[in-house]
Image 1: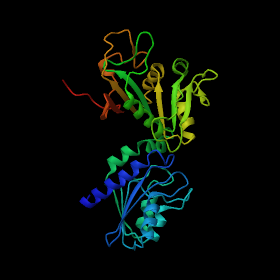
Image 2 (image 1 turned 90 degrees about the vertical axis):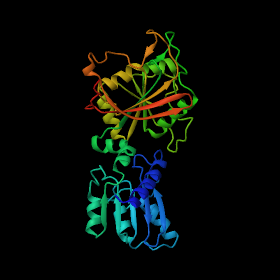
Image 3 (image 1 turned 45 degrees about the vertical axis):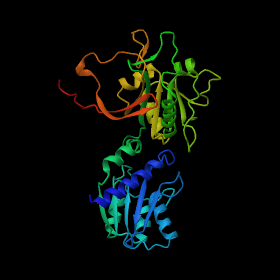
Image 4 (image 1 turned 180 degrees about the vertical axis):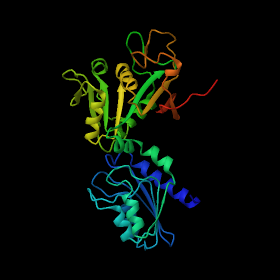
Length: 340
């Protein structure tokens, strides 16, 4: 990858990240278009039914009177090649005379899956695939998981003291973390298509599970309760489900849910963890210590019986939020711990 490719793709990724909460169930994609005369135009996918990133950039170029013949486009995901709610982006690029297209990732959607790249090459367009692939794959993880498995990307949100406790022995738990961490958690809700809790949490805390402390351009996520929510609970209207968690994920995936946020409590958290259904653990850690073994823990249920059986993952990021930390851990079933 050349230095200009790196710089342009970074910009395209930034454009995609800005519309992360807006575009689902469509992928959040960014595009940078540069003409042979040095004009640069940017685009990001609009909400469902709107224009894709490539078309937004092309329209901006035309509005400026730019000649797009021989231009280069940097796109974070393979341009679509099929008719859906919009016309194929590959046709728009070809018709505009674009000569080179740099793509971070091939689309995992079976409707695309390399067809867009082949169509471009057949039209004589130079195609480069791979620059920014790691970053694009991380950014688009929920979309890619959904397209590959038919299920949503599962994020398990946890909040605890430094010694791993979530509630005092008397049951009080609000609030372990501070305002900045809680606002960030609402951001997680805003980028999720559904949020799930157990009926026990509904009875104890009566959460509304709405987005109140972060921008939510698509509104509130679908609310799912494992079990039965009491009449009059703030979580209504909601889906009430029981039984196999895999079946719940299949149903949500069929509803175009790309990301499911599991908010607990400890029994539900253990159920998803024990069934190996969590893709990412997001844990907010407060600088607090209960200092004993009588406070509630993150999980309720049997854990790993031996060190060898411990579930390991990969730390993705550690971010400071006010006085708290947000630690993201991605599941990696085959990860090997460091030798001591």
